[in-house]
Image (cartoon, rainbow, N blue to C red; front, side, top):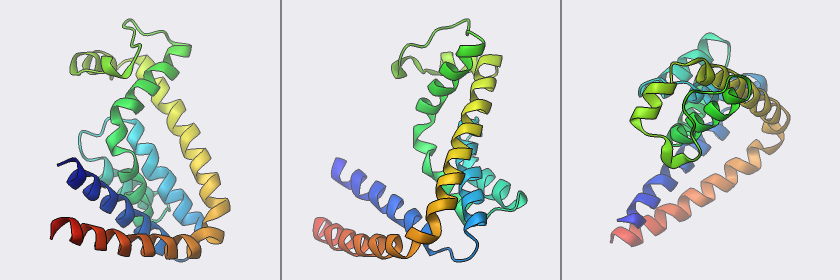
Amino acid sequence: MWRSCLFKFERFVLYNAIRLTRIRGASERVARGFALGLVVNFFPTFGFGVLVSGFLARVLGGNFIAGLVGGATLTFAWPLLFLLNIWTGGVLFPPKMRLEGLSEVTDKTMNALVWGRTFTVGAILNSVACGAIVYLLLRLLYEKTRPGALAYFRRHARDHQRRFRRHRG
């Protein structure tokens, strides 16, 4: 069971990596799209984050596909991002409820904190910082590393497909 889940997760990561590295053209639009897509993950989108990220990237002049990939990148890490938002916002506005670890992120604590000033300020600060860093890194590295990265991801995908067939058969 775990092996099957790992294969599916690896396939998801490879698929999005290949989609991102296949995009040709202006590295600025790709970097903007991916960064804007990634930023959406810091806010509660109630399951529509990937779609919102693609449309937000497109509306603000980024690449739509890069926005979708950026939005799908951190969707699994929502509890961690929630905790990071609370910790960051807590520096300026201490929350009424303390969260010491990831195990304390429950429905009750999320409902109590997600609409508060602490969470909102933390989400804004984290999204701006993360978006700026990712944008600058992609802007600097995308054109230089794209051909090599695409070849690597394609080789890895072929190897993954062979292992997957061997596992199922």
